[in-house]
Length: 323
Ligand code: ADP
Ligand code: MG
Image (cartoon, rainbow, N blue to C red; front, side):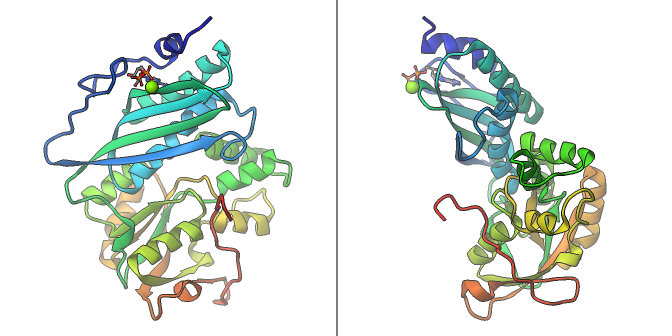
């Protein structure tokens, strides 16, 4: 019989050049660079809730790590280490091999060492902890947006939700768009470089990653910063051709799983942000403005206006597991 230790040794033990001590002892030992703070985040992925049963294991391995790295990106931290606590229903070599391939492809791409974890038998459930470094006192936070700031979002939010609708058969995308949307859903690219440069160059006041939906996640920033905002659909990316426009708009505003960054920045940084977008070859969209909050009620915090300047009635709440 294959033991837990065989599984760890065979699939989850890789060199860890960034750790003093990697997997195999009671703890990993890490030495953060002098003058840095540690940014630490953990996320659980449950089959049926966060990913479909029968998800390709290689894609799942990539995504499990990528969505966690997105939290580091949102704070402008540099990813360094990860821990993986997994329960797996059975030891299937082909499945584990593919999962590890996807996981370590992502780890290698973003420069992360897997330094420890836990391995048990049970319903498929993955809990990732990621640790990054950020120069002390400089992390991008949700609670720093200021009245007068512009609101920006990266990339093309909504593609992942469109891809999911396509997979579930509730919509039919054109072939070309389906390919783009499924890539966004299955192999998200956390905006690590964008977050790091926003922080390093002092371009953003506040930031968050879009995991649960653009408007819902923006509201977290507004709430934590005690400010209000108006955003306009005309300033968001063009809706992709090849999808039902109403659905595409809903996915853009409220779809989850995109892992783009939303951030607030003073208008004086518009030029520098355009230059950064060109440098990273990543579009940045200025889609709204931050205002002082008149009252601190949720109902008035965020206004969305459409092409005609009319307030848009839309379910702006992001994905909520208990909702
Ligand atoms: P302990 O009983 O002390 O908790 P374990 O037997 O759970 O130790 O794990 C042995 C070693 O293997 C530990 O260093 C742990 O961090 C590491 N480990 C366990 N599972 C994983 C995994 N999935 N990926 C990476 N390292 C792991
Ligand atoms: Mg253990």
